[in-house]
Each structure stands twice: as C-alpha cells, then as structure tokens.
Amino acid sequence: MKNVSTEDYLSVIYKNQNEAGEIKSNLIADKLSISNAAVTDMVKKLSKEGLINYTPYKGISLTQEGDSYAKALVRRHRIWELFLFQIVGLPWEKVHDEAEKLEHCASDELINRMEEMLNFPEFDPHGDPIPDKNGRIPKRPNHFPLTKADVGAIVSVQRVNDSDNQFLAHISNLGIDLRSEIFVKEVISYDGSMVVECNGRTFTISQKAASNIFVEKAG
Amino acid sequence: MKNVSTEDYLSVIYKNQNEAGEIKSNLIADKLSISNAAVTDMVKKLSKEGLINYTPYKGISLTQEGDSYAKALVRRHRIWELFLFQIVGLPWEKVHDEAEKLEHCASDELINRMEEMLNFPEFDPHGDPIPDKNGRIPKRPNHFPLTKADVGAIVSVQRVNDSDNQFLAHISNLGIDLRSEIFVKEVISYDGSMVVECNGRTFTISQKAASNIFVEKAG
DNA sequence: TCTTTAATTTAAGCAAACTTAAACTATTAG
DNA sequence: CTAATAGTTTAAGTTTGCTTAAATTAAAGA
Image (tube, rainbow over all chains, first blue to last red; front, side, top):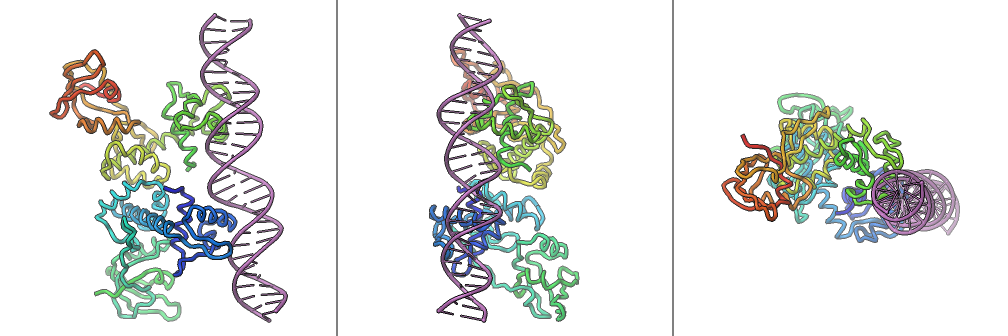
C-alpha cells in the first residue's frame, strides 16, 4: 500500500485523463490545490517508481501498474461510498468526502468484506461503476444529461455528478434519487430550465442542475 | 482535528500514563517505535500547543485539553472496533489494527452515527469502556485476572487484553468470548496453567494467556 | 557526598512534500 | 518565421517528523 499523497496523485490522474490516457501537470496541480512545481517533483518520483510515464514538457500518463493501482483506489472509494450510504445511512452529499478519507486506510480484507455485505454491487450511490477485484469495470447503461431529454419523455436517473455536494443536497431535496423517474413537462427556452414531475411532485430544475443528472429512457 | 502523529502521541500518553497521570518519554518512544530524541521534539511542540504539560527532565502529562482530546480518540477507536466486530463481522483479533487506522480519518458525524447504530454501547469487543460524547466513561465491573480465580469457581469473562492479536486468535480458538463462563477445574502448580471448562469443552490454558483474561464471579 | 548509570535533551542532518521566483520550452498568432 | 504567451521545470528554501551521536541531568549506590 502506497502513501496518501501517492494515492491522491494516481486517483487524480486516473479520473482526469483524456481519451488518450494523458493529463496536463497543470490539471493535477489544480485538482490537488498545490503548485505546479510540486507536481513536477512528484511526477518524477512516481515515474521512477514505475507508476506513470513521464517525459519532461510532454505528457503524463499511467503505466499498466499505475492504472491498476488507481482502479483499486476507485474501487475502495466507491465501495466505501455505497457502504456509508446503504449500511450506515449517511446522506448522499456526505458520502464522497467521508469515503475520500477512509479509502486510504482500510485493509483489502475490510473492503472485500464490505463488498460482500453489499452483495457485490456494480454501482456506487451516484451511479458510478465499481471495479471488481480483478479491475473489471461494469458497463454503464447508455445515458445522457437530463438537459438532452425531450419534452414529454419519461426518463430514469442513472447517474449524478458526485463532485458537488451542494448540487447533491439540492436535488436530494427535490426528491430526486438514483433510479427516480422524471417526466419532462416543459423546457423554458429562455434559460434552459425544465419543468419536471418526479415522485408525484412538479418543480422547476435549472439547466445547471439538469446537466449534472444523467438519465436513460424509462422503459 | 489534529494530524495523525499528534493523535498517536496523545493516545499513547493517555493509555500509558500512571495513576498520577504521568508518563516517561522513554515509554512513548517505545510504544511508537521511534527514538527518544523524536519524542523530545514532539513533546515540546505539543506543550506549546497546550495539549500536554512538560518540563524538561521532569514528567509529561496531559492538560485538560489534551486529556479530552485523547478521550475522544479512545472513543473513536472503540466505536470503530465494535462496529467492525458487530456490524461488519470482522474477527476479534483484526478489529484493533483496522480501528487504529480508521480512527484518524472518520468525521465526528460518522462516529456518532455508528454509535447510534450500535445503540450507544458501553464497552468495546474486548470489554474496554467507550467514553460517551461528553467524555464520560462507563464504570467497569470489578474484575480480576483469570489466574486469580479459585479452583472450583465459575467466572465470566469481562475483558481481555487487546494488545496482542495472537493471544486473541488463540483464546478465540479455544472458544473463549466476552461473557463466556469459565469453570476452573484445576491449577497446575508447576507452571500455573489452568484446566478449565468453557462452553462445554475442557482444555488447559497457560498462565500467560490466563493473565490477560479478566473475569468476575459468575452470578 | 561522590560516582556511576540511566534517562533525557541538544545538535546536526535527512527525506518527503510542499512553497515562490526565475528560467526554460512549446505552441500559437500574427 | 518569429514573437508572445501559456505551460512546465529548475532552483532555493520551508516544515514536519524522524535519525544518530554527543552532551547533559537526575537518581541511586557506595
């Protein structure tokens, strides 16, 4: 098991790499709220340890080893999230930050035991996929942002953006949950907000909020 | 919330202070497996922060603030232990080490929620008392080491020493649990080992093991 | 009381992970 | 194709918590 700092770098790289698997050092500094110089230092070190590929002034990407370590971290994080949500009953918007801390210090044995208690789940409370012990990642359903749903359509929530607690608390307050069905009644063309019905209540949701809710056609 | 290192020092001081509330720097170094010089450094720092009382070459003791912080740490630790044991089902001998890591990174909200799930327990899986939110520590029953039990007596296990996993695995294997009743059949004067009956099985337990099991007269 | 020994502190130094400021590359706009 | 700018790296320095070795203090026995 690596130290917290190393794990943070690997997580950030994994989560923010582009389609080609690359990431700017800039972005790492940004996400971790540290200086670029610090990133350069660390990136050299991680490269020496064989966790990332790095050529100065060129790109940064995970090696095979770095990638599977990062996947294991994501696995830990998401199992913690689901455990805290489902077993402990922590609210939606709190599980991410709590899991962020816990993921660095639970043994594999504990993680596996929790996974078993949760009956080998495929998705975390925000709808993100949980890699299994071998790094296999469940295929996600085809989903699109709620903003793209047609007026008159009924869609079901598949995933929500987990990076903003205020957003989560907000939609939770509106009664929107994972698997909730949403009926799109109207789109206000002026600002892109939508009038929707969900769990028997009708309300307006802003474009900003809707763009962070991912849905598929209900069927 | 303080950093892990500070928390470790406070825990060790709290757990190893004598009746007068004092501890030798020596012992801290020993328990944390670090040098005496490192302890001196840190002790100065903690003193500056108002967590301990310290005069060079004289004793080290917790201030009021340090003491209540340490109690809160013990509380976290023991709630984690019981949670892992009772809810998650981790074996006796594994909960201590796991809790050691987790206690540093759970929010108070999570700790309180777990306490609630456990129905405000008074003792951890080893029989050690759990301080409540206000730092109140449940009174422990009058107990004594099994080695002091008379031949012919029936005693019940109240507490076991939690600092040695091998010991815990061993007695767990013998079928000894918290609240188990033990009937003392014979004491072998040669080596102090005891022939006992517990949960329908008769076996011999060494003096070493028996001295780490604390019991009271069954009634 | 003096001396020996054990415990503790000081001194000097190290590694990790950060900082700011200056120097360098790469890219892109004219 | 060059110059400006955005991104990245180097250099020098900081903090935290540790190390070993040397110096100091306290305690205990002669």
